[in-house]
Image 1 (tube, rainbow, N blue to C red):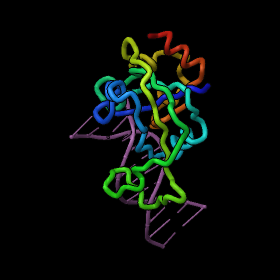
Image 2 (image 1 turned 135 degrees about the vertical axis):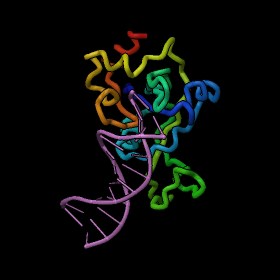
Image 3 (image 1 turned 180 degrees about the vertical axis):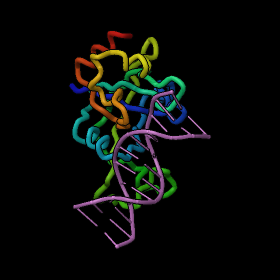
Length: 150
DNA sequence: GCCAACGTTGGC
DNA sequence: GCCAACGTTGGC
């Protein structure tokens, strides 16, 4: 079973929002690399760190579970959506999403600052300069190490 | 196919 | 709100 990290701006959708809704379609991903991870890598049952980005204290705040295979993101077909993509068709959708369901919050936020201090995590795209990938793989070793920090 | 311009991400 | 870094677009 693979592990992942998924970023969300808490102002748009936070771990508490997921806790309340239990399950959410992870729409709006418009980056090919992130899409490919969802489409080709994710399987139901995979676990993912829920990461809060673009906020006062960026960091890992919880755990979610992949709850579906990848399927077309409906927002790409909706002209009123900010994620609308005029170049995508229903026959050949460009963007996909997965459903994610709430597992739990961490006992505390493990901040980006803290993650950066550990050499064990230096290979994570998350801590590398200039990387903006919003869906990224996490190795078993990194996963276990981070949970050990909790 | 190059690359400048543009838009977005996301830490700070 | 700023701005560095990056990905995408589109003219040529």
